[in-house]
Image 1 (tube, rainbow, N blue to C red):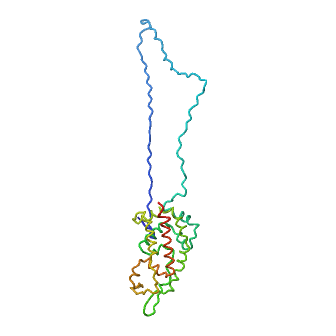
Image 2 (image 1 turned 60 degrees about the vertical axis):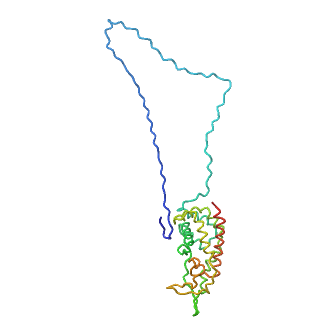
Image 3 (image 1 turned 180 degrees about the horizontal axis):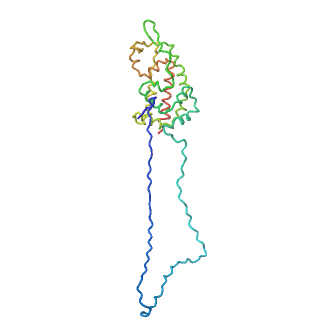
Length: 291
């Protein structure tokens, strides 16, 4: 298994082989002829014997069919026909050729700038499978998201007695929350449903059973939706090496994806969690109910 620059594994190609049977036939014909030469004596000594009469071969008997007043109808010959082949509409493409079909499937759905940026690079399905894989493990797939990390550093507020997150830093995530809230998840999932076998195929590159992809999506969404409600402006921070960490071990012990949701601020976090909860319900209803 190989991976591309975004950490996405690639699938190997296969070739088909065919056998050709050669049939030879031979035709053997032999024509045998003989002539007998006898030393002839003088004609005066020997009277010629009469030659035996030539006997012609009997003629070949030909069976004559008497004419009939009634003309018999020949039986109708019906040529065997193959069963009709129904055309396959929109056949599933190969995984390595699925980018344009996926873009076409989502082309009429408002995806916003962030969504369009996600569809521009190649390997859409492979990148999506990697995103689900990392998120289901609790990680934040920064390299796979079409959203740049905030340029401003993590904002803190220090009143001399404690250090907490500064509420002014939450605005950095307003655009992301608004974009998520605008997405029509039901239409998006229905448009991607035909490509589910390709998502499972890409998932199998991680050494996981293909069918486990469906449950990995649920786990990833559940991690986000179950992020506890914490006002980080009241959660104390302590400096550990070069980064700020939460003093409360119950907060610091959360998965990285959950702590990232908290850093968005209470209002933005509520939007993200609600959208993840909606996506999980739709996934169970529309996707997992499909064989």
